[in-house]
Image (cartoon, rainbow, N blue to C red):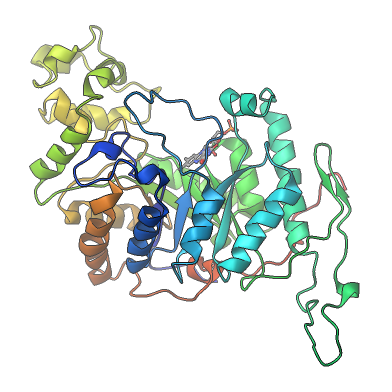
Length: 447
Ligand SMILES: Cc1cc2nc3c(=O)[nH]c(=O)nc-3n(C[C@H](O)[C@H](O)[C@H](O)COP(=O)(O)O)c2cc1C
């Protein structure tokens, strides 16, 4: 494992449409893609053509949206979607989200390891604690306080990893001559009991080609950094400036050091949601068309981001802020995206165009030709803000191909991105070390 001089990329794959909530009705998109595994496989293969290290499938167990207008944003079931994709791809990593609160460790261990075996060692588990009361309601429960959820998360991840290591790596003999299928002395229970979860084991599964799945985490906070520092090989951040990203990456690396690990074992990914067109105007128009139904609803929030004393109104959508409005605007410190919103407003764009710059989206949005996205990624990567990017495409149907055909070659020409996969497993392609079972450097709690 070395510090990489080239960025690593992961592709967000959600509902089969794309990351904009109106992508389901974009031109050329089949509105039935929510249930189309063929579409998901097509997008996965496009990302693999771009040598993406992994696909990342979020999961929310209690999604509640305005379904009259917006599609659901997650896939039917992340594990089943990835099982379909695994059979149709060869190198791209397959990272699924799984809740530590609403799953038993034995189920998580079995499903992720089975998928890891099926995919020849390409699986990652994005371990999330789940804080949504709507998710809890689907399990007939309520959301426990954060310390309890995080304690359960530590226990769950440790038990899952111990189960993954419950067969010694040479336990599966398969010797037809002697008639011995496995060496049962090398397959042992784990007997772990925490405060919230427990398992005897062993798991009925041999090692995968990468030993066992890789742990990911997403989001932040002190509790999240502690989980990531101990167990994760990949972390997706929610960061809006280079300074913020550097700070979060350093906090993560410190947490890894505290856990006795080499900080280079944890790769930090910044999100990026590119808006690409042959010109900046074209890129904005693509987003304007996608935001057609939601732009008016977002105006009040934009007013709050700009701390305007008198709120902007939807009537002003096609006009820029007035001189008086600009003079009284300031970046709302409660939202880290506000500084960017103010910067774009000061450039004199109409309110509709300000919104089309993605200022209320969940990750930074470079707008313009492919080179604008490549420039953004280069600047962040060279500033030490991240080890790579979690790329979230507005409309998958044409957007993944555009990214792969236009942005990737620029990054490759600049020497910032690999020409091919380093190996065949996710560990190899992330450049993280082998691990089998629990990491001996991390203490088992509640044994
Ligand atoms: C890029 C990204 C993706 C995320 N994906 C998920 C997800 O799929 N499911 C989920 O429940 N939370 C997801 N989260 C949220 C975090 O995992 C975490 O729940 C959040 O940071 C706060 O958690 P807490 O309130 O339990 O501390 C994601 C966060 C980020 C930044």
